[in-house]
Amino acid sequence: MILPWIGALLVGLSLGLLGSGGSILTVPVLIYLAGEQEKVAIAESLGIVGTISFAGFIPYALKQKVHWRSVILFGLPGMAGTYGGAVVAEFVSGTFQLLLFAVVMLVAAVMMFRDKNNLKSAGAIEISHAWWKIVLEGLAVGVLTGLVGVGGGFLIVPALVLLGGLPMGLAVGTSLLIIALKSFSGFYKYIDVLDGLGLSINWQLVLVFSLIGAVGSLIGNKVAGKISNERLKKGFAVFLVLMGGYIIFMNI
Image (cartoon, rainbow, N blue to C red):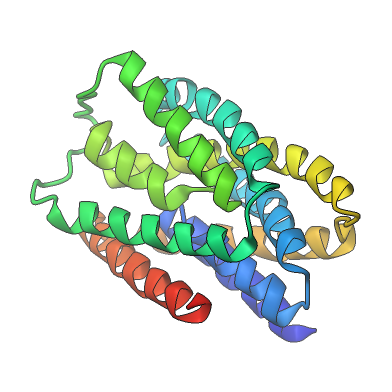
């Protein structure tokens, strides 16, 4: 059982370092290393990533590296969208969910690679979108992430950086809270979805995985402070390409 716990640590490191990426690691770890059924793994992933993300968010909040306006305008509609996406997920296959997830990851990576502008400093935030557009973006991302059963940081971080005008460091802290809120919303609905399918959550696995991942997120948070915003951004894009390609390969 040691391999799933190593995977849990890597999930936490990813979330603490990049503010995303945990879900794409969590689902394969739960399926291939912990032996969970596909739909159950997707549901458990939301609970685990939500818990780890909230733990990783705390240090950023203490450092005042959270943009609360974005949390409200992006996160709250995202919660509603994720709940709705989880409803739709009951009627599609797990393979479809994972392939859709991989495609969106590659699109997000292209967005990050094509942005040639220097990231803004933490004191020079520019919100380029009207508030109602940010609300719609949050809702759309929520629906999609609820459908594919992941926290959605791979979409939230690029949206906050490229569309919301936040610097990478501030986007990561903000993303972690948004991921937690959306993940818990989707997890709540997935419990009903699993019940309708005659399946259930392995609560012990979720608890232990979350605790180990939370430790990893704190470590990742410490390391992130020693890496430049630009390197984080490019590393994040490379991560999306590699993981997206791997998921497509495993499901085709």
